[in-house]
Image 1 (tube, rainbow, N blue to C red):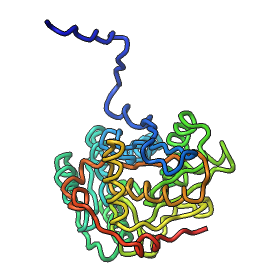
Image 2 (image 1 turned 90 degrees about the vertical axis):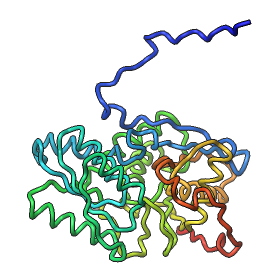
Image 3 (image 1 turned 180 degrees about the horizontal axis):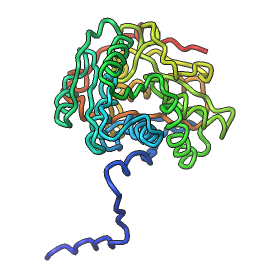
Length: 325
């Protein structure tokens, strides 16, 4: 006997968007019930991997280009140049392709290999620099190219439009979905997410705690950077932070595996670092609501061995996480 078929959804339940850029933002907030360390603590993940190219960087790139075009700083068809370690480059390649701008990206030679084919497929040109000299060198090279070739420098590390984007979008989205948020945990990259989102949440609730996840010196986590390397992004407002937690690569990758096993959520290493930092901070709490910004999805990192090979760890490693403030 044939099983009855489920009724089709009515056409009115579907939404048509103007174009791919209309899909940027308004990402879901999902509770991580199986990861809560205590009955009184609720964890909610802001899944930024749901953006078109799979990361939170779609937000700032779309916003910064829209503002630059509106103000006349970016001319139609003008080339855009930027220093990036991956996700911003992918977002810029997509937005540039959509709006008719050539894109040139200055990337450290340690950029995750899976990124380069995607960047080239979108039509972006890449310029490699030695990773040992830090992201500051890539920024300097990008600025030199922009000056020499009369290109537009996006400047994600220095433009006030980066945190402003999160102030105007990410923050209000979190407040609308989770008005009782007590703690926000973000990865420390450009500093735009925790600065802009944090400012907006503080206006909503002056007592909200803002916690940054930062790579332990010597650890490599795509999308995050250690301030111990000597470069503090100009847009990062350290005075906003209530704490930062240093996370080792192995702890971040282990958290990625746990999230997949417990919740079925596949995220990138930076999100694993955020998860690890959140659980560390939760040790100080008896109850409360925490929002974790998961900056990207994990699909592009599937070729990275630590994602599918169990990582060993020791008690000393756990004790070596440093909590500031």
